[in-house]
Image (cartoon, rainbow, N blue to C red; front, side):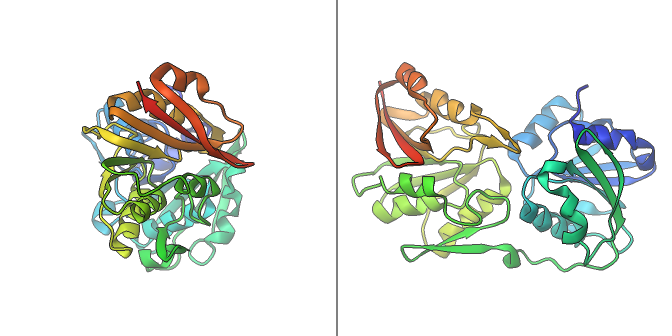
Length: 339
Protein backbone atom coordinates (compact mmCIF):
# COMPACT_ATOMS: atom_id res chain seq x y z
CA UNK A 1 0.00 0.00 0.00
CA UNK A 2 1.43 3.39 -1.06
CA UNK A 3 0.71 6.27 1.30
CA UNK A 4 1.31 10.00 0.91
CA UNK A 5 4.23 11.57 2.74
CA UNK A 6 1.76 13.07 5.22
CA UNK A 7 0.20 9.68 5.93
CA UNK A 8 3.61 8.08 6.33
CA UNK A 9 4.31 10.60 9.06
CA UNK A 10 1.08 9.60 10.82
CA UNK A 11 2.05 5.93 10.50
CA UNK A 12 5.42 6.60 12.14
CA UNK A 13 3.41 7.64 15.19
CA UNK A 14 0.73 4.94 14.93
CA UNK A 15 1.10 3.84 18.55
CA UNK A 16 -0.46 7.13 19.69
CA UNK A 17 -3.77 6.32 18.01
CA UNK A 18 -4.41 2.67 18.95
CA UNK A 19 -6.71 3.53 21.84
CA UNK A 20 -8.10 6.76 20.36
CA UNK A 21 -11.47 7.45 18.73
CA UNK A 22 -10.30 9.41 15.72
CA UNK A 23 -12.07 11.89 13.46
CA UNK A 24 -10.24 12.48 10.16
CA UNK A 25 -10.75 15.52 7.96
CA UNK A 26 -8.95 17.90 5.62
CA UNK A 27 -7.01 17.16 2.45
CA UNK A 28 -6.96 13.35 2.69
CA UNK A 29 -5.81 11.71 -0.55
CA UNK A 30 -5.19 8.05 0.37
CA UNK A 31 -6.52 5.11 2.37
CA UNK A 32 -4.68 5.67 5.64
CA UNK A 33 -7.87 5.94 7.76
CA UNK A 34 -8.67 2.36 6.74
CA UNK A 35 -5.26 1.05 7.78
CA UNK A 36 -4.52 3.04 10.94
CA UNK A 37 -5.41 0.98 14.00
CA UNK A 38 -7.78 2.98 16.25
CA UNK A 39 -10.56 2.37 18.74
CA UNK A 40 -12.97 4.14 16.36
CA UNK A 41 -12.60 5.91 13.00
CA UNK A 42 -14.76 8.54 11.33
CA UNK A 43 -13.85 10.57 8.27
CA UNK A 44 -15.30 13.56 6.43
CA UNK A 45 -14.25 14.25 2.83
CA UNK A 46 -14.63 17.66 1.21
CA UNK A 47 -14.31 16.34 -2.35
CA UNK A 48 -16.93 14.01 -3.81
CA UNK A 49 -14.42 11.97 -5.84
CA UNK A 50 -12.17 11.40 -2.80
CA UNK A 51 -15.15 10.08 -0.84
CA UNK A 52 -16.35 7.79 -3.64
CA UNK A 53 -12.86 6.46 -4.37
CA UNK A 54 -12.28 5.72 -0.69
CA UNK A 55 -15.54 3.79 -0.43
CA UNK A 56 -14.86 1.84 -3.62
CA UNK A 57 -11.38 0.76 -2.57
CA UNK A 58 -12.16 -0.14 1.02
CA UNK A 59 -14.53 -2.13 3.15
CA UNK A 60 -15.98 0.76 5.15
CA UNK A 61 -18.40 -1.21 7.35
CA UNK A 62 -16.48 -0.27 10.51
CA UNK A 63 -15.83 3.34 9.48
CA UNK A 64 -18.31 6.21 9.32
CA UNK A 65 -17.67 8.04 6.03
CA UNK A 66 -19.16 11.48 5.29
CA UNK A 67 -19.09 13.95 2.41
CA UNK A 68 -20.49 17.06 4.05
CA UNK A 69 -19.65 20.76 3.93
CA UNK A 70 -19.92 21.22 7.68
CA UNK A 71 -19.00 18.88 10.49
CA UNK A 72 -21.65 18.48 13.20
CA UNK A 73 -21.62 17.31 16.82
CA UNK A 74 -23.70 14.34 15.76
CA UNK A 75 -21.02 13.41 13.23
CA UNK A 76 -18.19 13.66 15.78
CA UNK A 77 -20.05 11.98 18.64
CA UNK A 78 -17.79 9.81 20.87
CA UNK A 79 -14.59 10.92 19.09
CA UNK A 80 -11.76 12.24 21.28
CA UNK A 81 -9.01 12.89 18.72
CA UNK A 82 -8.77 14.91 15.47
CA UNK A 83 -6.34 14.15 12.65
CA UNK A 84 -6.41 17.00 10.14
CA UNK A 85 -4.60 17.07 6.78
CA UNK A 86 -3.60 20.65 6.02
CA UNK A 87 -4.60 21.85 2.48
CA UNK A 88 -2.72 24.33 0.29
CA UNK A 89 -4.93 27.24 1.42
CA UNK A 90 -4.43 28.66 4.91
CA UNK A 91 -7.85 30.32 4.88
CA UNK A 92 -9.47 27.00 3.95
CA UNK A 93 -7.65 25.24 6.79
CA UNK A 94 -8.81 27.84 9.31
CA UNK A 95 -12.41 27.66 8.04
CA UNK A 96 -12.51 23.86 8.28
CA UNK A 97 -10.66 23.57 11.59
CA UNK A 98 -12.79 26.14 13.39
CA UNK A 99 -15.88 24.26 12.21
CA UNK A 100 -14.43 20.91 13.32
CA UNK A 101 -13.15 22.14 16.68
CA UNK A 102 -16.50 23.79 17.46
CA UNK A 103 -17.96 20.27 17.63
CA UNK A 104 -15.47 19.01 20.24
CA UNK A 105 -15.05 19.64 23.98
CA UNK A 106 -12.09 21.36 25.62
CA UNK A 107 -9.19 18.94 26.01
CA UNK A 108 -9.66 17.21 22.65
CA UNK A 109 -6.35 16.04 21.14
CA UNK A 110 -5.60 17.57 17.72
CA UNK A 111 -2.96 16.39 15.25
CA UNK A 112 -2.25 18.46 12.13
CA UNK A 113 -0.09 17.12 9.31
CA UNK A 114 0.95 18.81 6.09
CA UNK A 115 3.62 19.62 3.49
CA UNK A 116 5.95 22.42 4.52
CA UNK A 117 5.21 24.15 1.20
CA UNK A 118 1.49 24.30 2.06
CA UNK A 119 2.03 26.76 4.91
CA UNK A 120 1.28 24.26 7.68
CA UNK A 121 4.08 25.77 9.80
CA UNK A 122 1.84 28.80 10.29
CA UNK A 123 -0.83 26.68 12.03
CA UNK A 124 0.36 27.46 15.60
CA UNK A 125 0.06 31.19 14.90
CA UNK A 126 -3.25 30.98 13.03
CA UNK A 127 -4.84 28.79 15.73
CA UNK A 128 -3.12 30.15 18.85
CA UNK A 129 -6.41 31.52 20.21
CA UNK A 130 -7.71 27.96 20.64
CA UNK A 131 -4.65 25.67 20.57
CA UNK A 132 -1.12 25.49 21.88
CA UNK A 133 0.54 23.51 19.08
CA UNK A 134 4.03 22.01 19.00
CA UNK A 135 5.94 19.95 16.45
CA UNK A 136 6.24 16.27 17.35
CA UNK A 137 7.71 14.85 14.13
CA UNK A 138 8.88 15.77 10.64
CA UNK A 139 10.19 13.92 7.57
CA UNK A 140 10.36 14.34 3.76
CA UNK A 141 9.42 18.03 3.93
CA UNK A 142 6.29 17.29 5.99
CA UNK A 143 5.51 18.13 9.60
CA UNK A 144 3.24 16.69 12.29
CA UNK A 145 2.11 19.07 15.02
CA UNK A 146 0.02 18.40 18.11
CA UNK A 147 -2.03 20.25 20.69
CA UNK A 148 -5.07 20.24 22.99
CA UNK A 149 -8.21 22.30 22.44
CA UNK A 150 -8.01 24.90 25.21
CA UNK A 151 -11.05 27.06 24.46
CA UNK A 152 -14.59 26.33 23.28
CA UNK A 153 -15.25 27.67 19.78
CA UNK A 154 -18.41 29.11 18.26
CA UNK A 155 -18.68 28.59 14.51
CA UNK A 156 -20.93 30.55 12.12
CA UNK A 157 -20.56 29.93 8.40
CA UNK A 158 -21.74 33.45 7.54
CA UNK A 159 -18.55 34.82 9.12
CA UNK A 160 -16.50 33.12 6.38
CA UNK A 161 -18.44 34.13 3.28
CA UNK A 162 -16.79 36.77 1.10
CA UNK A 163 -18.86 38.78 -1.37
CA UNK A 164 -17.63 40.15 -4.72
CA UNK A 165 -19.79 42.55 -6.72
CA UNK A 166 -20.09 42.20 -10.49
CA UNK A 167 -22.64 44.22 -12.52
CA UNK A 168 -24.88 44.59 -9.45
CA UNK A 169 -24.70 40.85 -8.77
CA UNK A 170 -23.30 39.43 -5.53
CA UNK A 171 -20.85 36.57 -5.98
CA UNK A 172 -20.54 34.53 -2.77
CA UNK A 173 -17.39 32.60 -1.91
CA UNK A 174 -15.91 30.54 0.92
CA UNK A 175 -12.25 29.79 1.72
CA UNK A 176 -10.72 27.14 -0.52
CA UNK A 177 -13.04 27.84 -3.45
CA UNK A 178 -11.46 29.12 -6.67
CA UNK A 179 -12.11 32.85 -6.88
CA UNK A 180 -12.28 33.34 -3.12
CA UNK A 181 -9.96 36.36 -2.98
CA UNK A 182 -11.20 37.94 -6.21
CA UNK A 183 -13.06 37.09 -9.40
CA UNK A 184 -10.62 35.28 -11.67
CA UNK A 185 -9.50 37.13 -14.82
CA UNK A 186 -9.86 33.98 -16.91
CA UNK A 187 -13.47 33.61 -15.79
CA UNK A 188 -14.11 37.25 -16.70
CA UNK A 189 -12.72 36.66 -20.20
CA UNK A 190 -14.96 33.63 -20.70
CA UNK A 191 -17.96 35.56 -19.34
CA UNK A 192 -17.29 38.37 -21.83
CA UNK A 193 -18.08 35.94 -24.67
CA UNK A 194 -21.63 35.29 -23.43
CA UNK A 195 -24.46 36.91 -25.38
CA UNK A 196 -28.23 36.93 -25.58
CA UNK A 197 -28.00 34.41 -28.43
CA UNK A 198 -27.20 31.62 -25.97
CA UNK A 199 -30.20 29.48 -25.15
CA UNK A 200 -31.26 25.94 -24.36
CA UNK A 201 -29.69 23.67 -21.75
CA UNK A 202 -26.34 24.77 -20.37
CA UNK A 203 -23.91 22.81 -18.17
CA UNK A 204 -21.40 24.71 -16.00
CA UNK A 205 -18.67 22.23 -15.00
CA UNK A 206 -16.68 23.22 -11.93
CA UNK A 207 -19.15 25.98 -11.10
CA UNK A 208 -17.22 27.16 -8.02
CA UNK A 209 -18.71 30.45 -6.81
CA UNK A 210 -21.37 30.34 -9.53
CA UNK A 211 -19.84 33.37 -11.27
CA UNK A 212 -20.01 31.98 -14.82
CA UNK A 213 -23.62 30.89 -14.41
CA UNK A 214 -24.62 34.32 -13.10
CA UNK A 215 -22.87 35.94 -16.07
CA UNK A 216 -24.64 33.66 -18.52
CA UNK A 217 -28.03 34.25 -16.94
CA UNK A 218 -27.33 37.99 -17.04
CA UNK A 219 -26.91 37.76 -20.83
CA UNK A 220 -29.47 35.01 -21.44
CA UNK A 221 -32.06 34.98 -18.63
CA UNK A 222 -34.09 32.19 -20.28
CA UNK A 223 -31.20 29.71 -20.35
CA UNK A 224 -31.67 26.44 -18.46
CA UNK A 225 -28.61 26.11 -16.19
CA UNK A 226 -27.11 23.07 -14.49
CA UNK A 227 -24.17 23.75 -12.17
CA UNK A 228 -21.82 20.97 -11.05
CA UNK A 229 -18.75 20.78 -8.86
CA UNK A 230 -16.70 18.12 -7.09
CA UNK A 231 -16.35 20.24 -3.93
CA UNK A 232 -19.15 20.47 -1.37
CA UNK A 233 -17.82 23.91 -0.39
CA UNK A 234 -17.94 25.17 -3.98
CA UNK A 235 -21.49 23.88 -4.40
CA UNK A 236 -22.58 25.78 -1.30
CA UNK A 237 -21.16 28.94 -2.88
CA UNK A 238 -22.96 28.26 -6.17
CA UNK A 239 -26.24 27.78 -4.30
CA UNK A 240 -25.72 30.92 -2.21
CA UNK A 241 -24.82 33.02 -5.26
CA UNK A 242 -27.95 31.89 -7.12
CA UNK A 243 -30.16 32.43 -4.05
CA UNK A 244 -28.71 35.87 -3.25
CA UNK A 245 -29.31 37.08 -6.81
CA UNK A 246 -32.76 35.43 -7.09
CA UNK A 247 -31.63 33.24 -9.99
CA UNK A 248 -32.46 29.62 -10.70
CA UNK A 249 -30.32 26.64 -11.64
CA UNK A 250 -29.97 22.95 -10.82
CA UNK A 251 -26.95 22.39 -8.56
CA UNK A 252 -25.51 18.86 -8.62
CA UNK A 253 -22.49 17.33 -6.91
CA UNK A 254 -20.48 15.47 -9.54
CA UNK A 255 -16.93 14.43 -10.36
CA UNK A 256 -16.98 16.12 -13.78
CA UNK A 257 -19.70 14.16 -15.64
CA UNK A 258 -20.13 11.30 -13.13
CA UNK A 259 -23.64 12.36 -12.01
CA UNK A 260 -24.72 13.97 -15.28
CA UNK A 261 -27.32 12.02 -17.27
CA UNK A 262 -28.66 14.60 -19.73
CA UNK A 263 -27.37 16.23 -22.91
CA UNK A 264 -26.76 19.94 -23.33
CA UNK A 265 -26.60 22.61 -26.01
CA UNK A 266 -23.57 24.23 -24.38
CA UNK A 267 -20.95 23.20 -21.81
CA UNK A 268 -18.93 25.98 -20.17
CA UNK A 269 -15.97 25.69 -17.83
CA UNK A 270 -12.93 27.35 -16.33
CA UNK A 271 -11.14 24.10 -15.43
CA UNK A 272 -8.32 24.05 -12.87
CA UNK A 273 -4.84 23.03 -13.90
CA UNK A 274 -3.58 22.55 -10.35
CA UNK A 275 -4.37 19.66 -8.04
CA UNK A 276 -3.24 20.65 -4.57
CA UNK A 277 0.38 21.79 -5.06
CA UNK A 278 0.97 20.05 -8.42
CA UNK A 279 0.16 20.95 -12.03
CA UNK A 280 -2.42 18.58 -13.53
CA UNK A 281 -4.00 18.84 -16.99
CA UNK A 282 -6.16 15.70 -16.64
CA UNK A 283 -9.31 17.58 -15.65
CA UNK A 284 -9.30 19.75 -18.77
CA UNK A 285 -8.53 16.75 -20.98
CA UNK A 286 -11.43 14.78 -19.47
CA UNK A 287 -13.83 17.69 -19.90
CA UNK A 288 -12.90 17.84 -23.59
CA UNK A 289 -12.77 14.09 -24.25
CA UNK A 290 -16.04 13.13 -22.53
CA UNK A 291 -18.03 16.19 -23.63
CA UNK A 292 -19.13 14.34 -26.78
CA UNK A 293 -21.35 12.12 -24.60
CA UNK A 294 -23.14 15.08 -23.04
CA UNK A 295 -23.60 17.46 -25.96
CA UNK A 296 -26.60 17.50 -28.25
CA UNK A 297 -26.19 17.47 -32.03
CA UNK A 298 -24.26 20.61 -33.03
CA UNK A 299 -23.59 21.22 -29.34
CA UNK A 300 -20.80 23.53 -28.19
CA UNK A 301 -17.98 23.32 -25.66
CA UNK A 302 -16.60 26.67 -24.50
CA UNK A 303 -13.81 26.90 -21.94
CA UNK A 304 -11.00 29.21 -20.86
CA UNK A 305 -7.37 28.28 -20.28
CA UNK A 306 -3.98 29.92 -19.86
CA UNK A 307 -2.62 31.38 -23.07
CA UNK A 308 0.42 29.07 -22.93
CA UNK A 309 -1.61 25.81 -22.90
CA UNK A 310 -2.53 24.18 -26.20
CA UNK A 311 -5.43 21.76 -26.62
CA UNK A 312 -5.69 21.96 -30.43
CA UNK A 313 -4.71 18.34 -31.06
CA UNK A 314 -7.32 16.95 -28.69
CA UNK A 315 -10.05 19.30 -29.90
CA UNK A 316 -9.34 18.43 -33.52
CA UNK A 317 -9.91 14.74 -32.79
CA UNK A 318 -13.39 15.27 -31.34
CA UNK A 319 -14.96 18.40 -32.81
CA UNK A 320 -15.98 19.42 -36.31
CA UNK A 321 -14.67 22.93 -35.87
CA UNK A 322 -12.91 24.78 -33.09
CA UNK A 323 -11.24 28.13 -32.65
CA UNK A 324 -9.86 30.57 -30.11
CA UNK A 325 -12.76 32.99 -29.99
CA UNK A 326 -11.12 35.50 -27.64
CA UNK A 327 -7.80 36.01 -25.90
CA UNK A 328 -5.68 38.47 -23.98
CA UNK A 329 -2.09 38.39 -22.77
CA UNK A 330 -2.88 35.75 -20.08
CA UNK A 331 -5.89 33.68 -21.16
CA UNK A 332 -7.74 32.38 -24.20
CA UNK A 333 -11.25 31.04 -24.76
CA UNK A 334 -11.72 27.93 -26.89
CA UNK A 335 -14.98 27.40 -28.74
CA UNK A 336 -15.65 23.97 -30.26
CA UNK A 337 -18.66 22.54 -32.10
CA UNK A 338 -19.56 18.88 -32.24
CA UNK A 339 -19.04 16.95 -35.48
